[in-house]
Image (cartoon, rainbow, N blue to C red; front, side):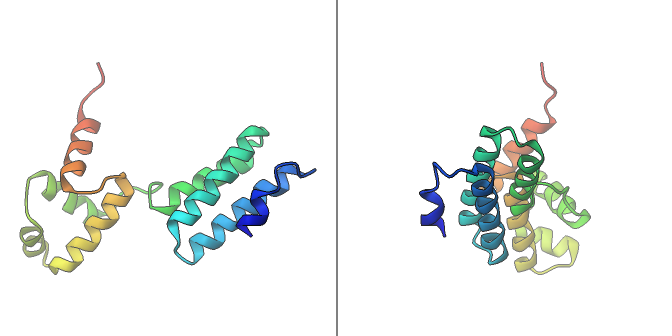
Length: 136
């Protein structure tokens, strides 16, 4: 399908091609192929933006945000973990304080990393510090 869509540049109905890219993104997301879904949704967003189709563009952007959880606030447990990471607690200390296993803490941290768009705890702390700093 991806090959066929790639050759549809001169299609008489460009919004239908964009919709096909959005559908491909939804299929890829459903089978948990996030990178492929991100690419397909991104292509759909570019095509919708090019043709000024704002309702579908908003739909695709929301799907991109939901793909890694960027559209939702952290749960109470995730917020507790974030606060403890900010206080420089180790995963083992967080697990003991919250009566969880270390693996559970790691799983929640992984979700938080995806949600915040960071790769590790140092990036998370840095990103949190930046968001706390008032603009000048």
